[in-house]
Image (cartoon, rainbow, N blue to C red; front, side, top):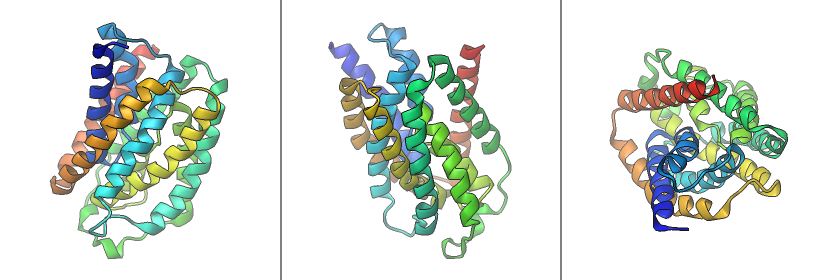
Length: 258
């Protein structure tokens, strides 16, 4: 593999993982289309949807470790939320990751497009008073959280994502979790989810290990940097960045599908 290939894959991993730590997402919402479109555009490589989803699954696992580590202090992690949603999403992501072997390239892209569209719509729903709730007074419906996480896990496992780009708007809009707690807790849930998706992809031979290793190295550097920056940023700015990113990705995928 030449230097252009290594640099391209590293930069995709670095940018995606920095945003992952910053916004509390696994980064697949950004890295999936970047891996699909940028390498062939530059003439360095061409990946199938199965390969992209496999690389993404492995990379997300390492990106979220760095993010969770950076958020471990300060009461940002809601342990009850992580246990209920984490257990459900682990089961769902394994089912989706393993079952995706049976799907066509177009089918995987279609699932991704639907997820991105739902997430984009939810991110633009007003969230008044959300960040006025003290962390020690946060309450939510545990079984609703678990059920939603299971559904997200199956869909996210199919595209090699950990589902955080859908979990974040669900946690903000449906469960009413404050933004910074959502970002930190979703990283922990995403870490759990990525285990199921990665095992499903690896056992069905959908992972191209060379680019995956380059992406992992980029993740371990960039994700903690993004998380440190996210702690200091205004929550409204964080929400708007994530909403615009998801919307742009959804538009791109749907233009290609049609």
